[in-house]
Image (cartoon, rainbow, N blue to C red; front, side, top):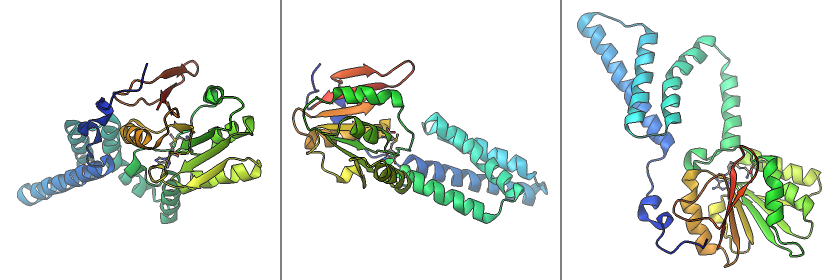
Length: 267
Ligand SMILES: C[S@@+](CC[C@H](N)C(=O)[O-])C[C@H]1O[C@@H](n2cnc3c(N)ncnc32)[C@H](O)[C@@H]1O
């Protein structure tokens, strides 16, 4: 299996079209549903002197938002979020948690997920069963340079650095909390892995022999463009679980029962 031609699907303008960010799209739908339901409640009260109970208005708003999300072709989890969001607000307000809880919750989620609304890549760890398969791809006796783009808590990079003291291991992470944890883990375990707090899109991949990614389907076309323009010939791009549309991988490695596949493309 070879690397795809310059005209593969991943290169097509369609794959690279920037659609509206799903989080913004979902927010606009929810606001539209709120305005429509508020108008309906207002008209019912003014014209028929009928005030529907709050829970009816909330269910209407949630159902409307979920229906519009479905009609607009959003992924199914957005329908669920739209459906649950308005009742969740009412329930949380009714329970009467102190406002500081929301502030701390918000700050925690902000530091953990940071710009997920933009990158569409949230934090979730890869399985430890993956690590030996990645380690076995690294040639023995060669001081290769390896990078995990979106390194999360740093588990993969630290474990590889422990197994291969002769090679260079880097993790780059955009979200402050996972980066901080991986940085401290490396320091405390005296690992030679190092971690950068940065957007991998702003980092040149030219000096790496292996680029590992565990991102999301939304990130793959952009990553493929970047890898092809920056990575050296002979270097290897690895992706856990997610394929690149239209680019046939050179290797598909089964990493265990019910575990995601590890894909590899030789540049
Ligand atoms: C699915 S997690 C994978 C974590 C880790 N690689 C692992 O295997 O356990 C993806 C990580 O990529 C990070 N990320 C997403 N977009 C990024 C970007 N543009 N630059 C750097 N990190 C990014 C997220 O914050 C998240 O921690």
